[in-house]
Image (cartoon, rainbow, N blue to C red; front, top):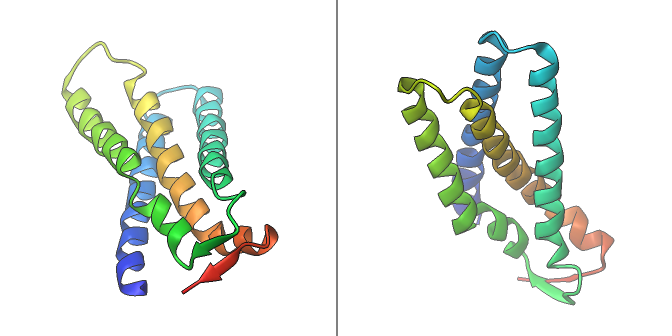
Length: 137
């Protein structure tokens, strides 16, 4: 299963790297430091919220398949579609004038989705043990 999950996790880590690139471009682009730090805090809070809401759907379950929770996050079609739209919009808006906060919006969404997905996927095993959920193989 690692042959399937590892490339997916690597893709989301690459997405996290792109989110960090967007944050760096905001930081070096002349935005105030407080603005950039506030965006980072909002991104972290949304990433934690995304992971928590996604994991809360598994709390009531008595048993899960061994890789069900990580795969739920790694192949979430909605999250993938949103991330692709954010990346496409961030590339398009580089050549447009008058969209001052678009990079900030793209950063927050990309950061929340990528880091939330990676965090929830890596935390899935601890979540299963903490809630005494049986794992089937």
